Structures are given as C-alpha cells and as structure tokens.
Amino acid sequence: MTTLTEHVLPMVIEVPAWAAVEAPDLPIGDERFVRAAGHAARTLPAQVHDALIDFADAPPQAGAIVLRGMPVGTLGRTPDSPTSPTTKDRVSEFTLLTVARRLGQPVGYLPEHGGDLVQNLVPTRSSADRQVSTSSKVELMFHTEAAFHPHRPKYLMLLCLRGDSNAVTTLSSIFEVLPHLPRELVDTLFQPRFRTAVDESYLHGRSNVLGAPAPVLSGERDRPSMVFDADLMVGMDEEADDALRALGAAVAGCHTGLSLQAGDLLVVDNSVAIHGRSPYQPRFDGFDRWIQRSMAVTDLAASAGERNGRVIVTHFGV
Ligand SMILES: O=C(O)CCC(=O)C(=O)O
Ligand SMILES: [Fe+2]
View 1 (cartoon, helix red, strand yellow):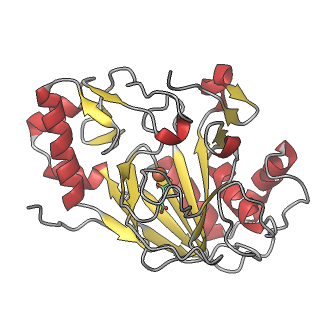
View 2: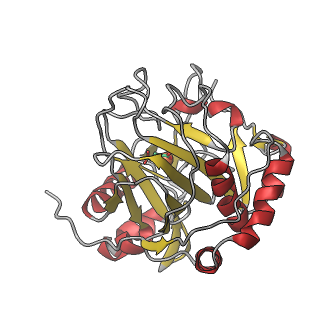
C-alpha cells in the first residue's frame, strides 16, 4: 500500500479584472488572431505577465501554476463533442492564446480535433471509459502530454469554462517525486530503456506502434526533465519495467489535485509535470464540465518538416 506524501500545490495567482481583452472577429486558427493574442500579452495584468516570465525562466517545484479569474466570456451550452459548433464568443480562446503566446508558440496536432489551436474538452458518451481527454467515468492516468510525440508541447494550458466539483485534475512533478526514488532506480530511468505507444486519439483506427527507445528522465541529475505515461510506456527489459512501475507507485503516492473552476487557467510545464484526471459523472444536459486546452512549443523550427502553419502533422501508427 502506498502512503500519500505531501506534494506542493501549484501557486495560485488571483487575476485582477483584465479589461483589455478584445478578441478580433476572425477564426481562431487565423494567423492574425494568433498575432493579436501575442500582442495582447502586453496588456496582461503585471503580476500575471511576470508570473509567466518567471515560469518560463524556471519551472516551479509544482511544475504548474494556476491563473484564477481569467476571462472566459459568454458561454452557451456545453457542446456535445469537441468539434460541435458552439454559440460562444471568442474571449476564452483569446485568453488562452494570449497566455500561450507569452510562453511560446501555440500549435495544434492534426489527429486531435483536426489540429485546432484551442480544443474543447467535453465529456462524450462514446469515450466515457477510454483513456482520452473526453472520457469521464474512468480515471485518466498520469501522463506527459503527447509523451510519444517528437514535437510534444513544452506547455499545456487548461482553461476551465465550466467546472465540475467532482472532476479533479491530478498533478505531479518530478521535482517532488525525485527525493522518494532510490538512486539505482533513478540511474535506470536516465537510460534509454523505455518505449512509448501512441495515444489512441492519434491513431483513428490504425494499429499502434512503440516509439524509439528513450529515457524517462534527462538533463540535470537533481533537476531533471521527465517524459512518462502510466498507460502507454513500457520498459524494454525487466529491470526497466520494474523501474517504471516503481515510478508509477511513487507518483501515486506523491501527487496533488485540483478541481478546476470557471476562470481557472492551469498552466503546466509538460517537461517536469505529469497530469491526469479523476473519474466524474457527466449529466449530458448541456451544462457538463467544459475545458479548453492549448499547447505550446518553445520553437516552431524544430517541427518545420512536419508542420502545416501551426498544425503539426506527424503521422503515427500503421
Ligand atoms: O480534463 C482534465 O482535467 C485533464 C485532461 C487531460 O489530460 C488533457 O487535456 O490533457
Ligand atoms: Fe493530458
């Protein structure tokens, strides 16, 4: 049995009224919309702006921060699926992309909702018990976002438009977990003895494949980066597999969680923190939980050969 040890909570920044948000009347994916969001970063309240600068300079111990009270605009009903039309204005998308632009370059991923720069995460009946972001009845296991992807995002941003107090977004950071891991285990995790399968949301019916051997931990020994997926990653030998299981147990014993409420923007450094979500019970009544998600890389050039505009098109599966 694992005992739960303390894990720091992400710092919460209470956002004062942010008046200067005026989303242009353009499609969200239009480069002019993204540029306007980039320019709007200069109108962010000073403490939000400075917190984002500090966050990019050095990830905090929790690997994440929460901006509380961000504008989400006027919502209609929660859409039935990520790509169903909505009646909402563009305020929340502009909010997300403004923060994304302050931290890096927002990108979409073609297999996920067609590459939308801002994705609607809503519960759907068909995926209620699957390991995808539109699930609800199952626990979404701890993962680095797009762990299997060579162009995985550096930053993950989850803006809550409509909360559900029973849905807890779970969070753990390698900075917090590391002291609980024996030295030899850490040695193993630093070696390229792990492979990761592709998230089913990227496969659209194609057969899964394991990616190239890679380490779980990299970089500085006492302040490492981590790529981990409790569902999709395997060790290539018994010792590596045991190490992975031990890491999973350590994370299970050392994590925190928060129930996102409307206006909360959770900003995660995807290179040190992993996240998941508790099960919850949707009602499918038009007022279920509604999260918008954006992802950002630090450098667009790295994906140049596999990117169309801001949409990363890397193909997975056979
Ligand atoms: O719904 C959540 O709180 C987290 C979902 C998730 O893992 C994601 O969107 O990447
Ligand atoms: Fe995720």
